[in-house]
Amino acid sequence: MEIYQRKGIKDWALEDRPREKLLYRGIGALTDAELIAILIGSGNSEESAVELSRRIMENVKNNLDELGKLNVENLKTFKGIGDAKAISIIAAMELGRRRNHSSALEMNKITGSNDVACFLRPLIGDLPYEEFWALFMNRQNKVIDKHRFSLGGITGTVIDVRLILKMAIEKHATSLIFAHNHPSGNLEASDADRKITRQLKDAGSIMDIPLLDHLIITQSGYYSFADEGLL
View 1 (cartoon, rainbow, N blue to C red):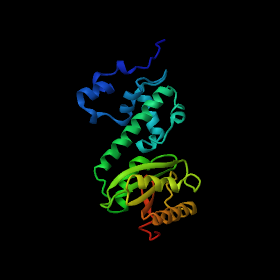
View 2 (tube, helix red, strand yellow; view 1 turned 180 degrees about the horizontal axis):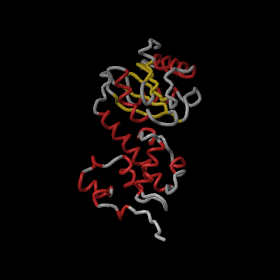
View 3 (cartoon, rainbow, N blue to C red; view 1 turned 90 degrees about the vertical axis):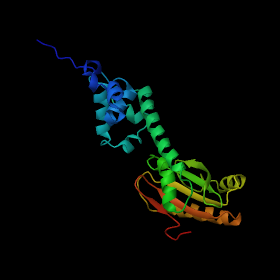
């Protein structure tokens, strides 16, 4: 009886191997799964690296944004993915996120809420947990600096208003913009969102460092307190 043996990538036609395809046909010729296959290098006893990568992509509905939300433990549920391969995928997704943000840095003059959303969405838009960020502005409405002040939630206990104002003074900021993400995709402001916004606005007014806006950012949209007339 003939025994069936699965062909590995080395048995494929030269032009179908991901690394060789990249070399001879260019990066644009590779699918997302083939790029991931290059990252992980090998599959498992039943699947090649490409086949395993295709299954991972199918699991996230072929959506790279959804892939970027997976953590090490999520990825390790796929047979053949251990810590090292999971970390390689996560690192690659983070580099892509930072590259997008580097592009946004070139346009760092803020003229409205959409500029803030474009500036910060590459950093926090697709995170699976909440982060709270501050943008420190100068008189020309350009971003002097940015800083993450909390991770995992937004309440009065994790947002230290005094620390934010201290940093603003040290950076000679003349105004502030705040933003945080809602991993659920919900763009409604919660009671906690409204409370911390009032606290930040009042504290900034005392120090003559006005709060220009506070945004809730999701992967597909944003909510602006300023646009809604809540500042």
